[in-house]
Image (cartoon, rainbow, N blue to C red; front, side, top):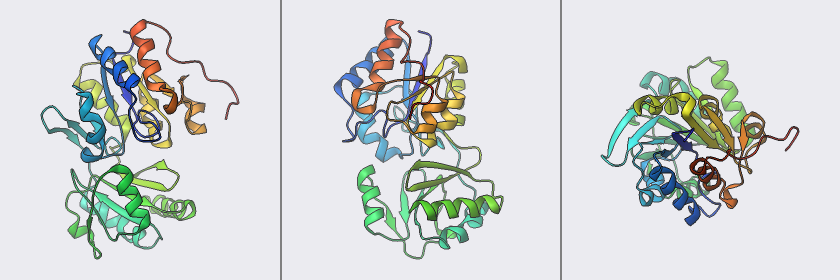
Length: 276
């Protein structure tokens, strides 16, 4: 097959709106891997949140979690790599987090913690299917190893927080994974770097990799891959940059591209100028 490694986003891409993986998609993944391909995900979710959906697939390729900052091999329950925020960097961004009306969820290798529980935090944890330790007086000294920091808030608050961090020239990778989410990652983190690290680990050339996604935290991954594919439901910026388009997550867009790869057909369709 032309593309030996397929890396898929999860929410809005692999998962349907009800957070399920369709039977057709599961079959397409199995057929692609049986034909010699390697399939995995790159997601903002942690091991617990991703595992609820992925363990049933029996993937033999490490997962790229926490927006590409953690490479996790489910077969061995070992981390392939971890690129977390240093303690000095967490301390440097902490005042900006406290100064803005945003909720903060700090992710370690496996566990998450938050300063308080409210409807917004509870909704996020429920959607991910995870729990978090509540520590009202959480400080950088108590966070332990930090892999990523997720902030949740209104667009104006997130824009202000992002501007503050950029204005301070702090070496933090900032990604938007949802209209109300701004995530803080290590400068060497992100899905793009993770894809390249995984491809090197598997001895697969970058040109033989394919990435598919739907939102702004997928930009670097799509830029890094040999072929970038946008979901039909993707953010306009993703549709504009992608090399090919597939169907929406409700229409089994990931299954369609995998079926095309196995059959030797072109993947998806060419982008339409001016669409969306």
